[in-house]
Length: 469
Image (tube, rainbow, N blue to C red; front, side, top):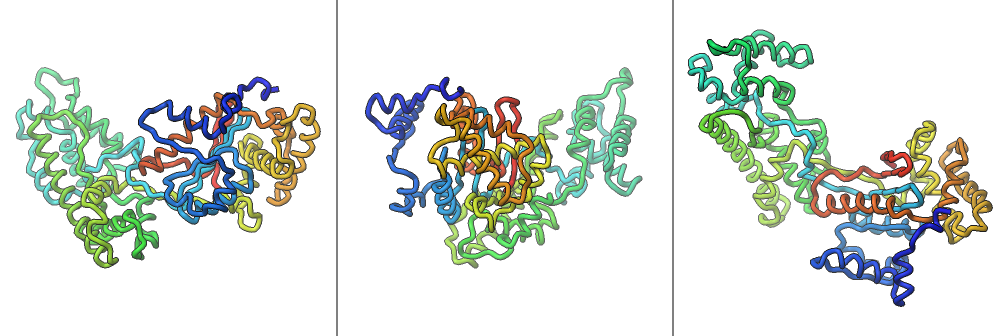
């Protein structure tokens, strides 16, 4: 039995010194970092929720592990009303489960893996267009020609392409032809007719990332068109107020575009040419941010909020990352346990796929029902493993009937969970703990996108899957 192989470290230490598991856990956690402070309360979650209903009001995020169904529902409802993120973790045997509940979570710094440069080559602003049009590549010395920033090269050949084709290169074929156009139009040194200069090589490689329509991404449009952005109230958060200012900027000064980021990628160029370009972009970005800042102050006055409730620094940060802002809208965990409210469509659809990990969610819900009814984990006692298999099947069957699903295709999962006996494997719990820690950091710092809704991990196959309820 797996559970016989486990070391109950916290429980054993707590028993040996006559302390509660909460106290020992706190002491061991504080040993990891001397700068961290901690406290513990030796009460059941239900007692805290009933006796101190305001206990969670000032929390930034709450992590709950191995809660029984009743306590989880109460905690979920309380934190949902307060709009405090709740991360629920459960580890049984080789299966790890994490469910994130958050009513609304806004992120400005999402740190996308592949961020597209904001160059506006197809729609250059006035100062940029004036500067780029003033440059004549043909009149340059060959030395200067080989140190022209690739941004200028792309612009010059893009203008030539648009003159002939009337539109930007879009398809793979068109972009390949555009690259060939640059290769053919490049000036060659009289002693070297084969090599491509480094700046042209960078321009050719940048075609996919730098040549495209400058527009507001659909994900950002959805945020700017959200009712919370359009119809502000005195309770609106800073995020929505600045988003409204951005929306107004797009409709007026920005000519339908977001504020300029104002940053340039690295490129082969002489210092003077690169700094000149950098300053042009920086000044335009500062001008855009200033316009958004002025509009933000107007909105604060209209809403009756103090002008210092949003700083200019916050507005500049928002403008810099406006193309990647994100709003996470979640669902309440308590609703999953209410058959009148819960949406079981995803469950029904996922269970039709025999490879789907939704089966683990179903069995874990069955385990919760088993706990609520029998006050123990299925298979927790060696002599009850076989009887508990029958009981767990009955619990799962009840759930499936409520959801309008057919019976499970195989009983292997039920047998396996009873064999676990509610035991936690150190390696699986450590993996889940690390994942939960990352999510906590995301909520505390308001950076990076959190895991969406439900995450399940199978340590046997090292596969994972996310679901939305």
